[in-house]
Structure formats: C-alpha cells, structure tokens
Image (cartoon, rainbow, N blue to C red):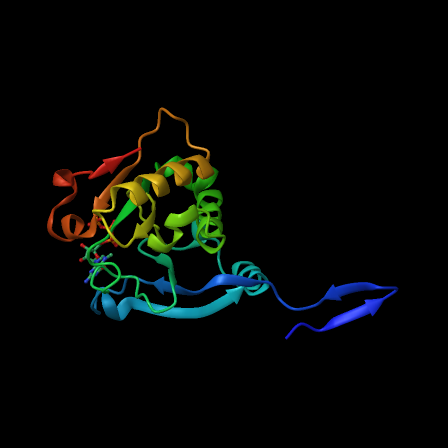
Length: 197
Ligand code: MGP
C-alpha cells in the first residue's frame, strides 16, 4: 500500500519502488572439505530498489573478496547452478578479466551487471535472463550473465549486444557465449563459443 502525504494538492508517495522480479543473492566460499553445492549459501532476497541498495552498500565489494569466492544474483526460484531446470538448457555470456582489471574495472562491471538484471535492461528478452555470477580467482576474475536457452539465438545475441554496450566494451573486444552443457563437460581449452558479439 502506498502511504501518501497530501500538501497543497501535491501527492508524495513513500512506498519503496518495486522491481519487476524478486532476486536472491548467493555467496560461494571455496572450502575443499565440502562439495561444490554445500559451499553455496543464500544471503538474502529483495524486490525493491531501496532494498537492493541497502544490500549492495552493506556487503563487501567483489574486489575485496578472497580468491575462490563468488557472488551470484538469480531470479527467485532459480538456483545458481547448471542443474536447475531453468539453467540446464542455457548458457552464459562470459567476461574474462585480466589481473589488472580487478583494480580498475571489476567492481564497476559487476555493479553494471546487477543493474542490467534488476532493471530488466534486455527488452523483450529480459525474461530469458536467469542471473549473473562473479568468480574471484587468482588466475583472473570472471563475470557472466546466465540465460535459460542456449538455442534461442535471437534472445542470446540481443542480450550479448546490450550487455557489451552497457559495460562500455570497445567494439574490438569480443565476448563469447557458452552452453552450460559444454562448460560442465569440457576443459577450458576445448571450450567452444556458441555465439560471439
Ligand atoms: P567455476 O567456479 O565456475 O570456475 O567452476 P573456476 O573455479 O574458474 O574453474 P574453471 O574450471 O572454470 O577453470 C569450478 C568447478 O566448480 C567446476 O569444475 C565444477 O566442479 C564446480 N561447479 C561450478 N559450477 C558453476 C557448478 C554448477 O553449476 N554445478 C555443479 N555441480 N558444479 C559446479
């Protein structure tokens, strides 16, 4: 309900601003004595602009996390893993960063990624988006947007083009989309991009 204050005819609304979707933030900490899934923890869910900023300003910046940690932001009801029904036929637009970029660009790229998600920036194809993941790794950090259907060429390429533009990447930089089924079964050097933009 909107609580409104009326002053000289003006109506001010004090409700929080609802997002189109409810989102869940997850944290992964690499503890080698546990399975991958047991290392994944739900932090919290939110569905308003105000609650997003309250959360964002209260957690560590990604660049301050220790190597081996991830944040994931997924739509409520989708677990941030290949096995989830909404992910298993999907894939990811992957941004690989050099070690130098952690200092210069990582936090900006991740915040822009979060805003693309909660702001539903991909037009009619925002529905195809499942979530996003940031991996903090000594060998080089990674950020990815996960979408639900790797065979949906129109949607996947639209999301890739918009994402690349939002990050402000030069047209010379090429980013690739990989199906999770390939990521889960192939080692890094054999990984094939299904699409590039
Ligand atoms: P990673 O954390 O996505 O990347 O996957 P990292 O650490 O950079 O490693 P690389 O292989 O990409 O170079 C690391 C490992 O975590 C994977 O090989 C899997 O064993 C496990 N893992 C990652 N994800 C995203 C999943 C998942 O969705 N499901 C399961 N079961 N295991 C996963």
